[in-house]
Picture 1 (cartoon, helix red, strand yellow):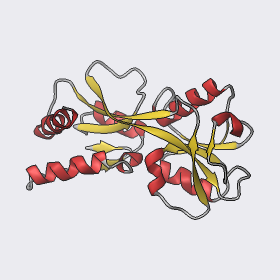
Picture 2 (cartoon, rainbow, N blue to C red):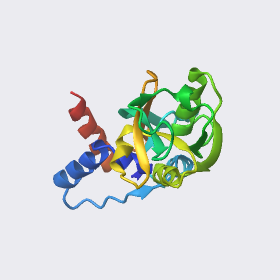
Picture 3 (cartoon, rainbow, N blue to C red):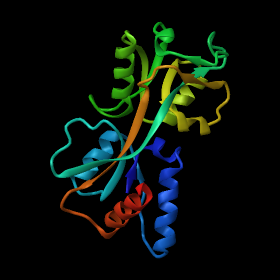
Picture 4 (cartoon, rainbow, N blue to C red):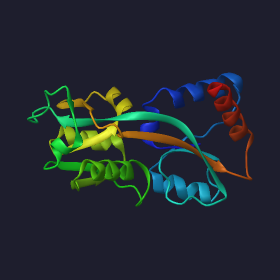
Length: 202
């Protein structure tokens, strides 16, 4: 099973793994963390049975099934000395002149696309100072004063020095984690995961 690092911030994936191990105590479940591009290629090459990837996925092949896993709000990560760090909530447009830190996702994919779309709706094109491969590193760069970042709300679990998290006022600022697996090649683990998800959604 593959996953993007930010998938572990939310409680749903760790909870799913606990249930898998409780139901199948002898299961040999190999977990692989990676960025969107790596996980996507591993699925296509059949090196992974299933992956939790941040949507959207750019034109996934018909051989792959993409289904919602969890949807969450986004928030802003700001350097503690930022002039707006003490504000209760902000909209994206109030940071239009800031330097941004973004994920280096493939075009049209993942949190990078969500970020670009949200900025477009807010009426500006962000000045991206640094692109990075995972959310933890993004927040570390915020801590270093490199720029500001749009991150999943669950990333607030990462308590780094000099970082404050600010609620977003923008209505459309949400991100979705998707579960992706092969339409015709389903291992016992994939079938079990789907079954657990179906049970949880009832």
